[in-house]
Length: 108
Image 1 (cartoon, rainbow, N blue to C red):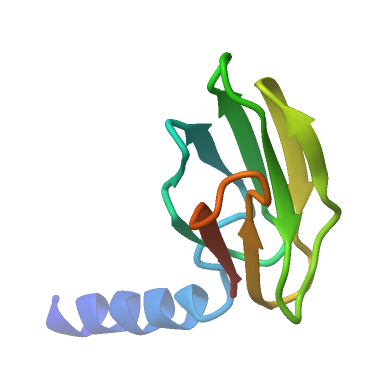
Image 2: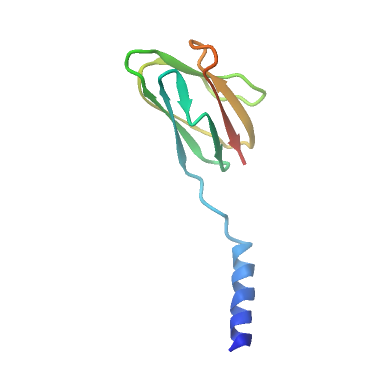
Protein backbone atom coordinates (compact mmCIF):
# COMPACT_ATOMS: atom_id res chain seq x y z
CA UNK A 1 0.00 0.00 0.00
CA UNK A 2 2.78 2.44 0.91
CA UNK A 3 4.60 1.65 -2.36
CA UNK A 4 1.47 2.45 -4.39
CA UNK A 5 1.00 5.76 -2.53
CA UNK A 6 4.64 6.67 -3.07
CA UNK A 7 4.36 5.91 -6.79
CA UNK A 8 1.22 8.07 -7.02
CA UNK A 9 2.95 10.90 -5.20
CA UNK A 10 5.99 10.76 -7.51
CA UNK A 11 3.71 10.79 -10.57
CA UNK A 12 1.75 13.75 -9.24
CA UNK A 13 4.93 15.75 -8.54
CA UNK A 14 6.18 15.03 -12.08
CA UNK A 15 2.88 16.17 -13.59
CA UNK A 16 2.68 19.33 -11.49
CA UNK A 17 6.04 20.43 -12.89
CA UNK A 18 4.57 20.29 -16.40
CA UNK A 19 1.29 22.11 -15.77
CA UNK A 20 1.22 25.92 -15.69
CA UNK A 21 0.31 27.29 -12.26
CA UNK A 22 -2.69 29.15 -13.66
CA UNK A 23 -4.03 30.38 -16.94
CA UNK A 24 -3.77 33.99 -18.00
CA UNK A 25 -6.83 35.89 -16.90
CA UNK A 26 -8.27 39.32 -16.31
CA UNK A 27 -7.75 41.63 -13.33
CA UNK A 28 -9.77 44.78 -12.72
CA UNK A 29 -8.48 48.20 -11.66
CA UNK A 30 -11.20 50.67 -10.64
CA UNK A 31 -10.77 54.42 -11.08
CA UNK A 32 -12.90 56.20 -8.50
CA UNK A 33 -12.48 58.97 -5.91
CA UNK A 34 -9.06 59.99 -7.30
CA UNK A 35 -7.56 56.53 -6.76
CA UNK A 36 -6.68 53.36 -8.64
CA UNK A 37 -7.99 50.36 -6.73
CA UNK A 38 -6.03 48.22 -6.28
CA UNK A 39 -3.01 50.46 -6.64
CA UNK A 40 -0.73 47.54 -7.48
CA UNK A 41 -1.60 44.43 -9.54
CA UNK A 42 0.48 41.33 -10.21
CA UNK A 43 -0.47 39.22 -13.23
CA UNK A 44 0.84 36.41 -15.39
CA UNK A 45 2.18 37.17 -18.87
CA UNK A 46 -0.69 37.12 -21.39
CA UNK A 47 -3.23 38.43 -18.88
CA UNK A 48 -5.48 41.44 -19.34
CA UNK A 49 -6.05 44.38 -17.02
CA UNK A 50 -9.50 45.90 -17.22
CA UNK A 51 -9.59 49.59 -16.22
CA UNK A 52 -13.09 50.40 -14.94
CA UNK A 53 -13.97 54.10 -14.87
CA UNK A 54 -16.52 54.61 -12.07
CA UNK A 55 -16.31 58.32 -11.29
CA UNK A 56 -19.08 59.90 -13.41
CA UNK A 57 -18.38 63.44 -12.20
CA UNK A 58 -14.59 63.35 -12.75
CA UNK A 59 -12.48 62.69 -15.86
CA UNK A 60 -9.53 60.31 -15.53
CA UNK A 61 -6.92 58.90 -17.89
CA UNK A 62 -4.32 56.16 -17.65
CA UNK A 63 -0.87 57.11 -18.93
CA UNK A 64 2.04 54.67 -18.75
CA UNK A 65 5.13 56.52 -17.57
CA UNK A 66 7.89 54.00 -16.86
CA UNK A 67 10.48 52.06 -18.83
CA UNK A 68 7.80 49.53 -19.84
CA UNK A 69 4.78 51.21 -21.44
CA UNK A 70 1.31 50.50 -22.73
CA UNK A 71 -1.09 52.53 -24.87
CA UNK A 72 -2.59 55.55 -23.08
CA UNK A 73 -6.28 55.53 -22.19
CA UNK A 74 -7.68 58.97 -22.91
CA UNK A 75 -9.87 61.04 -20.59
CA UNK A 76 -13.19 59.45 -19.64
CA UNK A 77 -15.64 59.26 -16.74
CA UNK A 78 -17.27 55.88 -17.29
CA UNK A 79 -16.85 52.63 -19.16
CA UNK A 80 -14.20 49.94 -19.33
CA UNK A 81 -10.95 49.74 -21.29
CA UNK A 82 -8.78 46.60 -21.48
CA UNK A 83 -5.05 46.24 -22.02
CA UNK A 84 -3.33 42.88 -22.59
CA UNK A 85 0.22 42.39 -21.26
CA UNK A 86 2.43 39.98 -23.21
CA UNK A 87 5.87 41.04 -21.92
CA UNK A 88 7.23 40.58 -18.42
CA UNK A 89 8.20 43.61 -16.38
CA UNK A 90 6.86 46.43 -14.24
CA UNK A 91 4.47 48.90 -15.86
CA UNK A 92 3.99 52.14 -13.92
CA UNK A 93 1.09 54.43 -14.76
CA UNK A 94 -0.69 57.55 -13.60
CA UNK A 95 -3.69 59.76 -14.16
CA UNK A 96 -2.07 62.94 -15.46
CA UNK A 97 -5.14 64.95 -14.44
CA UNK A 98 -4.68 64.15 -10.72
CA UNK A 99 -1.17 64.41 -9.19
CA UNK A 100 -0.41 61.45 -6.92
CA UNK A 101 -2.91 59.14 -8.62
CA UNK A 102 -0.50 56.35 -9.59
CA UNK A 103 -0.46 52.60 -10.02
CA UNK A 104 1.71 49.65 -11.01
CA UNK A 105 1.27 46.39 -12.90
CA UNK A 106 3.84 43.63 -12.45
CA UNK A 107 3.81 41.01 -15.20
CA UNK A 108 5.45 37.70 -14.25
